[in-house]
Length: 428
Image 1 (spheres, helix red, strand yellow):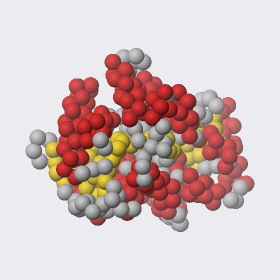
Image 2 (cartoon, one colour; image 1 turned 120 degrees about the horizontal axis):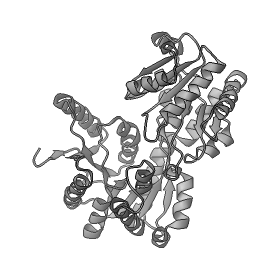
Image 3 (cartoon, one colour; image 1 turned 90 degrees about the vertical axis):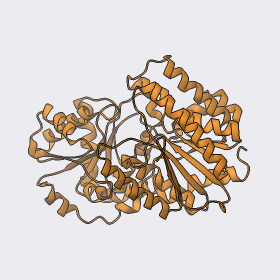
Image 4 (cartoon, helix red, strand yellow; image 1 turned 180 degrees about the horizontal axis):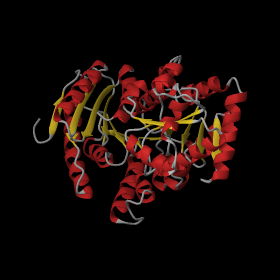
């Protein structure tokens, strides 16, 4: 490694018909990348598209663990015929550090485009946008803007930025430039596609196709998990029903409100259990203790992604309360696909991505219109009635997952379709 740049050479992509440079400001060694980045790119590589990843990796506290994680990832990607390059991610001070990463990333991306004769630069989110636009303006590559979430609005909704502040204005300027110059745009929900197509003059003028590709999961991993009793025994779950939550707590995910939902469930069913699977179990414990939840009525633990199907098999239903705000119209939570693939109905608050329609059309859970005891009781009664009276509920949940969130039949083919469209001429 020299100057913070590490070179990982994979296969020679000289014979590929189309080559893409996929830029992610999110590290490939993180768990989310293993479910929400790498599988999509494996689908592209399997379709004969030359794939190079440029990611920004955080320094891990344990240098030896970092070496081991990167070695395993390098082997995995090489086996999928994917080339991986990375730069070091810089965190502080926030704006100067990000600006530095963007400048270095743009120069390195441009060098990769020139060296590898890359045709398409795929920007995952907003920070890679300047790098992708640099490559387009200098080397005339095509650009795929993978929007993910509306970054400026998300930072305002999270309380990190003020609307109209310098970082906000810079981000919105690059957004307009991306919509004006993109050859293809990917979003996570139908709701945000409709909003962007009706409000963005730049997107309308560019005539770039806007494709909806939700956060997909490998639903087949969840099929036939018959370890329910063993997992319950391992976790010392003696009662029921079991409510599950998967993911982080804080900022967007409303841990206190979910703890209060479970408190209401305990009032209705005193032997209920809450199974919380998160990277920060101590946060979950604090939230539950604050609500006076007895320790024997919950289990808070960290679960490896490969063990998630087994762990979810212990549950009867699930929850996901997400901060209701404008930016979440673009949200497609990965956990929803996992819940459904595991055969679990779920409770969610209204206004998140396309989930309102999904729930109401398929009867796989319940929506709350607010965060109060009355709404919690109504939603819990609805889902408990489903579990007790609808013998086809689990199979219906799995069918909804397969029809809406399957990586194999939806996510990967949709990505390939984007690239075939670019290969055949790009914008219509």
